[in-house]
Image 1 (cartoon, helix red, strand yellow):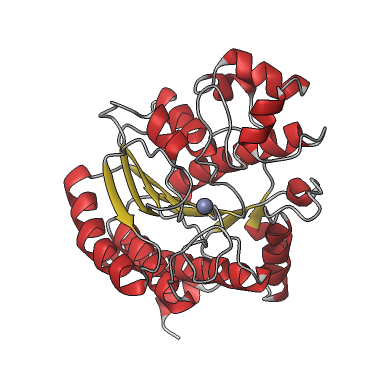
Image 2 (cartoon, protein in one colour):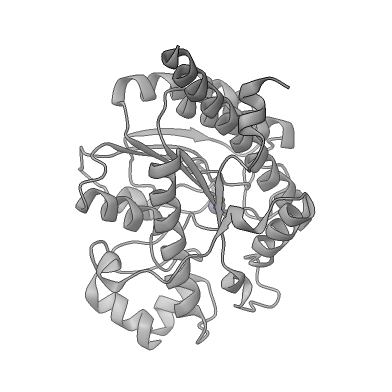
Length: 326
Ligand SMILES: [Zn+2]
């Protein structure tokens, strides 16, 4: 082992953001598998990842949420005073624990973005609630964690050119609507056209795939777009929604991507971003495999890709520092 590898091998190359309360909402047989968060956490511990690699979030401050969401809607979420139609759109049973679950998750993505800015890469074992609009929630998403985190950092003057790379199989209608007409953010999305949401407000650059499309179409679009948009837009923070639901057999998606194809997707995104020295906050986002094991496997592959990309970036930075020292 060389000197650089010895210097780098001491610790996990990035932090995970995770709360043991992420699975406290018992949704019973609901399709949203909150259990996956705990399964991933336990698998990482079993692989020998030390506890100090995990950061525990606090619930987001209302001030950060109100920068993005309508006060009336936020109050209703807090009091549980949602109408029947609002709960139906959310597609979640309203439980008293839901408010804390949602606020904690928002805090989790904020902490992930802050940690990424400081350390280059951080990964939220959670997040990706891109169907939440300013004044209502949809599709399991009550509040939009990505926009809340990005706008907090922007308000604090810590970023000016955020880019959101949303590779969940569903189009991020909430994010696109919140950022409609805005030139100070770049949103990129590859999603399936013939599934929810029916209405897809445009982002900065959208790639629409169709039921049955798989690795070939997905990776061709990604390879063509990612280096180009990074070079042209020059973001100072990337938020990457690494959805596991483009996987073949997903209950809520119709693409036919393979585990290897999604691992290649993660490699391309994370390597291209980190090789340019751009910080990246990773969120797991959706994943509804008929077998939960498939979803967990796809998320673990994202973590592997993040580890390699971050190792390579740190090795490069350290080599530069060592060379300059001589
Ligand atoms: Zn999804």
